[in-house]
Length: 338
Image 1 (cartoon, one colour):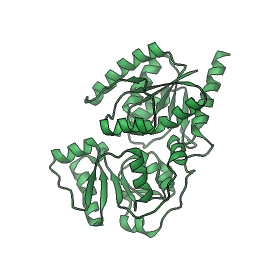
Image 2 (cartoon, one colour):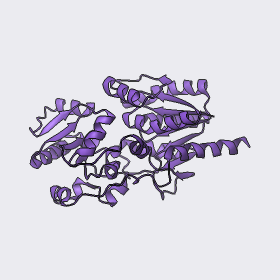
Image 3 (cartoon, one colour):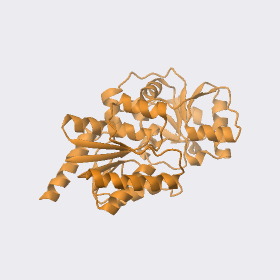
Image 4 (cartoon, helix red, strand yellow):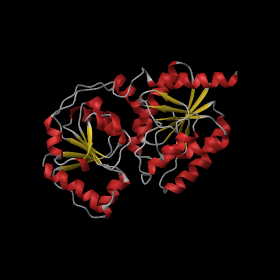
């Protein structure tokens, strides 16, 4: 059996690591294609080295607009599919790498699975929402982190979350609340002047130190608009994975618009102020680990009143996610061959 994974962003390096490990443990041929969608030499290369990943095809598509990236990825990935002829392709999350690859697999009639299927923020203006819908509709099997009620999923398997598998195995650190707040802001909806200044105004009113791990697009936005950050915001470069898990293990709370970051709040026993109008990881909010900033009358009161319990199993309902995924694909392939 030959499995092929397509990745391209830092969260996807995280998601592919448990699959990579499981395939190595069980002598399964696993090919990794890296589109370089979020390439940064210091961070991307570090993730690959930290996780000991073997990248078989590096598309090196950098410094392009979204449309050009999607077009180039489709063209180059099509050639790789013809060469590798995988039995099954794994696509992760809601990135443009996933959108591009799902369309190519569909057009070439190559079966593929969508991991993190069924998540919705119910706002088509969010670019990732379209990517999720296309990948769900065109995939042969949809792996969801939790039981999903979306009727559009044709072949749903609840597998849990791959990052929780990774965290439990390698990053099970002691939890404290001693270090500064962690903040990440990078989504398009927040990179307009009014919204961004509202976030910064709240940070200034908080008063205590905030470590702002800054995305390259956010850095450009701040520079282009000549925004002066308040003194309590300390700008940090994008964090390596081990650095971020250290920060999350010990920080007071989190300010973020990242779906990946908010979903890990139960593991790190942290509350998260979610700077989003709509979110896809609804379980985090429903159990009071995160709340959308816009819905709070007094955000600081909510943060300081109680501390949540730690839930290392929050998104692992059925055992080892990587094993569930590979075993499910084996069943499909065995059924096809019969």
